[in-house]
Image: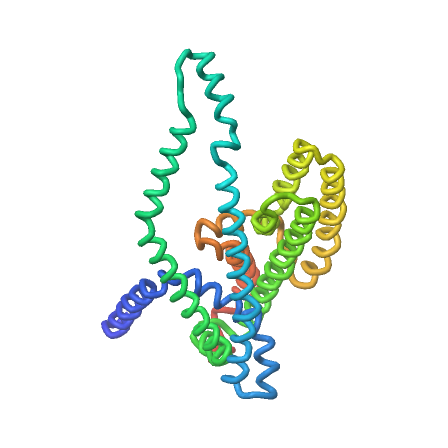
Length: 339
């Protein structure tokens, strides 16, 4: 390697690192924009047959805002409201402080005032929340800016997607055949994760949530979102929510509703997985449940909330890369397909 090439590689490394520092603060929003752009790009290609790329991209961005961002804000608001009610219900009256005070006094001979103690604790928590108001405002500002970044990035990913893909292919030092196989397998993995697992989790969690609503389980919106997240993890699923909900209905004097929720969740939610998963997964790629479990759990630690989607994709991409290497490794000594 001569001095000029070495200097150029150092420049690339420096600017790549500085660019990474610029991107990281909005990493979740950028990953989200890439995910939505991937889903909408086939529609973009069809729309470009009838309209210019900017108009098609703008129409899809407006559709994404109306169909994804707005419902997401509504869901977050509903979940936050349910979570607030959960906290409010866990007050001093709910734990029967008077009886507990008498029990402590009978056992220890000490007189305690739990109501006053809890009230002081609540005041302390209120003071902490007031002190954190600046931090909450900062989070809100960052969220608004991040959504703006995601929307603009989505527009340009859709409008210039073809040029971006061509640029990536030109930079990749692999033969055309190897690149075609890699992108084909990666595309199958992406759709298997999105359609075969994410979509099924949303459907299952929503169906199970309808059961909670029908049987009058409190804070159903909050628990529905939890069930959707749990449904992303194979062998875990929404049972961790509707199971305790059945017990809750029994203990609150609603045995008929408890039996109805158990039957509904066991039959309807269970059958939805048995029927939907073969239809959706087998169309794209068969990912081992171990890949999904490790990808979802590890992805959350590595990428935050977007790791629920990208974790399994990363592991699937590794498998796709190994398959391409196994099929084309001996051909890489001479690369006649390189451009």
